[in-house]
Image (cartoon, rainbow, N blue to C red; front, side, top):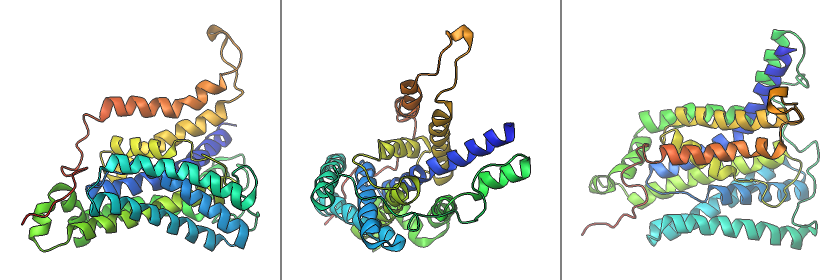
Amino acid sequence: MDEILIASLTASTLRVTTPLLLCALAGLVSERSGVIDIGLEGKMLAAAFAAGAAAAVTHSTGLGLLAAIVVACIFSLIHGYATVTHRGDQVISGVALNMVAAGLTVVLGIAWFNQGGQTPAVEEAVRLKALVPGYVEPQAGWGPALGYALFSHNVLVYVALALVGGIWFFMERTRPGLRLRAVGENPAMVDAAGVSVPMLRYAALMINGLLCGLAGSYLVLAQNANFSPNMTAGRGFIALAAMIFGKWKPVPTLFACLLFGFLDAAAIRLQGVSLPAWLGGGEVPVQLIQALPYVLTVVLLAGFIGQAVAPKALGRPYVKER
């Protein structure tokens, strides 16, 4: 029935959107402070490995989440040390983090678990459950279908959505948030006011690490049952594109992530669907469906990266005037 299909697609969209949104918000916070973060992909991948390894060994959801956050924050600290403290190239630092995460997770996975880079499967009891029990499958009728679409998710889905409003309020209505925005626009003015530019940027990177940790842990504790090499599959770069498409603002970034999430969810639903006769019949090519989110990423970056107005001090190391 139509309501079952719509409910199922809506629920899938929200689930797929969650790690993208958390990662995009992470990039938004760091870039509004003036620090480019190409390393979102690597942080999310490292966090996913940490969550999978910790949860599988300790049989604890909380320790899995904590391990993911700690590892992602360590990666953020490394990025900050290279770019804020030593004023290194922010793009190169981010790319290096991606490469380190891609290689290190496989090496550690093989050394610790000897399963080809994978972690052991996380027990069902340890995985994140739906916050409202009872919504296992969409049911006929708009009421039950709507309930499934909105209430069949784990806590991280609702946390990600709530963070959109939380980060908007923080950036627009609080003194620390306004200072963080100012350091991304005019760090010299912030410094002249007696506020430490490096400390603000490090604080933004810690928030960035926290959110990347949640995104990575979601992939293992909610979406999959274990960590596998390169399981992020470019989500960090898609999140970066969504953030740019959203013009470094939380609410537009949410809608950009929902667009990517919808395409990904629709791609899953379209697998096995037959083409109409006027298109030659047969099934929709799986490869074409799976490529849609990545094609959209390239199109948006090509079309909007020159139009979106980035923070004025983005990518510029701050040198204190004497």
